[in-house]
Image (cartoon, rainbow, N blue to C red; front, top):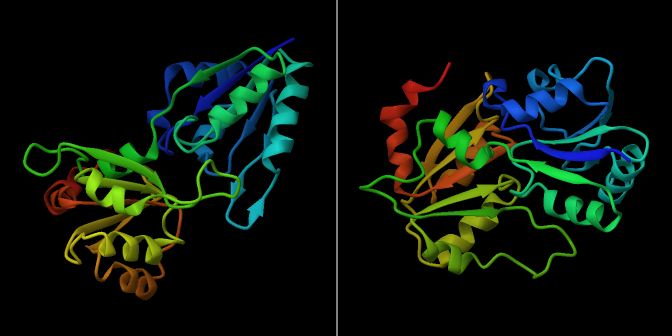
Length: 248
């Protein structure tokens, strides 16, 4: 019986991969990876390892979730080190908790290796601090894409709007119009700053900066697409000053 490691690959920049995660990739027997794991991270994998793409992108699922879990169990029964490589952090909208639960129930040894989540890293590389003494003392992380079978029917956007000074939305581009409508109906000003950060921390990173009242039109006009992190709140104002300090 082998062991499964749920490893967070971080948002894309290979420099943000943890040393523990990198070490596991270099000695893994099998690596089952997600769609958003960057080529630079995949290049760290042991060349002798079996590599399996289990990525899920909107409308294009390589392997459905149930098959992924069954595959992890089967590979752990035949190999010593099995890495489930996930973009960002396994426990932040990465279904890591679900997979770990099922592995434990199947009697498979499993360990989580946290990663840098894109909701923190992408804004940082865009020069947007999620907290700031003069702008924000609280942050809420929320998914903009809700799957069937959730524990509740919908995100309470009214509570989100009033819950903190900075809102970070994962997977929110496709539902951006609905999200903006819900937040403004809850009382957020149409002039509230908003930033969209696409391919955060990668060389191709790009940002779209605007206000709640006009951002949907900006997306349509520019053709801005997923994957992107959405940041809403006064901290977005810092982008104009700090974006030139992007890490290299």
